[in-house]
Figure (cartoon, rainbow, N blue to C red):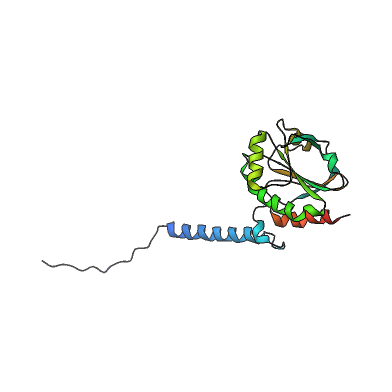
Length: 196
């Protein structure tokens, strides 16, 4: 039997899948580079800034607010005139609230001797649960209990965590919603503490 040999013809690959895949990868790389170029790298630890919020400059009087602390003593914002106060509304069940608490502790421990304090207002949990959380982290600043959302109403912000920096004259100077980091606190709050 005679076998005929036919010249092999190269078939053209009409499957566009590899080109589409390469195109998508290139688009992804360009998108990543675009997002990376928009990050602020000017801060002292911009790499740790990550997704931290940036405080917004505001200028209005602090609300009148009085609540019980975890020792069942009533305290008022008015009692802190003459100090710089960071009011932090948070909850023990809130993941970003819990995540930022060690940062707030570290900042407080560094600046407490400079006329600065933190009032952490817990939104709704019971005294024992809040005290256990605070003791577990070794928190030394003021912890207030807010079973009915009075602080959230007073500041007009129901999202957690949210924070407000009140200067020595009782004026709110900065506000933010979300988890903050140490670099942002040093950049924005420390100059307010340094004012006389």
